[in-house]
Image 1 (cartoon, rainbow, N blue to C red):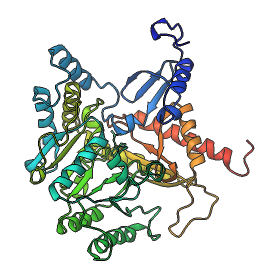
Image 2 (cartoon, rainbow, N blue to C red):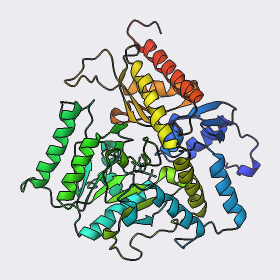
Image 3 (cartoon, protein in one colour):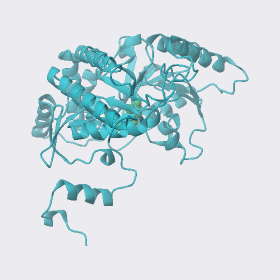
Image 4 (cartoon, rainbow, N blue to C red):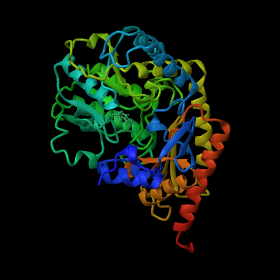
Length: 460
Ligand code: PMP
């Protein structure tokens, strides 16, 4: 018999977890890996209903630039609630939207802001990706798209088609009909088997030659989409030179370049937008996650020359979330005004160096990479033979155990990347020095314990 929530006497974590497990879709995701029931959160800390506290290095999959419930965000939400402003306004003009747009445009890369248009999308990154494709298809009258292996752009049809995940695309036949995928530079698991800068050079040469080959099979596409740092693909940063080459190649061939900044935006990589590292100016940028200050918001920003789509071309009911605009504006202003971008760069470099230094003692760490506070630690089988680039086989089993061992130690980290063997760290930009130490200590101890138990001579 179903018990009405109001009549329940038990609200213990175990009961809640079990009820949700039995009633939710089998496609549920994070709830599988993290059997916790968050009740309170502040900054980097999350507290479960059972009183256990965790350092959150997942941050809503990179959403929480200011951590949980930052005072600036709470104040913006509270002020908006107290003002009596309508919370739902479709896409009508509001003071909150005005302030958000001001704050957003103030952050845009130079050379982009002065000729940019913004489109407010349904509140998920994937909808802004769909909007970007539709915009460029409308503007160019072309259909095909160029994307990259390892990419992640979302779960709706177009975004999924442009993504690299084979497991998520396999059950949806025909979905990738109009997408040409190029190899993304990934030194550790180089798609050309050479690694380093040479691998990146081969990637750009290959793109250029394929596009120019009259028998290469690529019909002039509507756009190319890429991430400047692949997030879900395993925290793989593209070299700046490669990005500049790709920008040159696409511009010369009249192919609009869409940069997906859903995860890399708002200071995460040590620049406000990740494109700023290379200085490229894209034709469109897709943004979500951190721009809403922890509430749902997604936008497409693009060069006004492409603004030829019709009124209502990408409509949607939830494109005017007043609270998200207020929380988002406050977040953008705070990140820009408080030096948090620079802090992400400094703290990220320090954490990378510390993790890198662990590789000798912990040979299961195959590769450490990232940019700013978007870090990845790829776990490998240290006993196996390395390939031509020096990479050993990924070890997803160890990675799952490390994630669980981190949770036991009060640290939330998620996995990603090829074979799901990369531990991803996405701490908030407000992480303190003490929290950095605690994250590194817990992660080191988790990897050391799991790999000691798994090593051949270990007595389990
Ligand atoms: N693009 C990138 C780069 C992402 O990381 C994500 C989400 N992880 C998306 C798009 C999709 O965003 P959403 O989950 O909000 O649809």
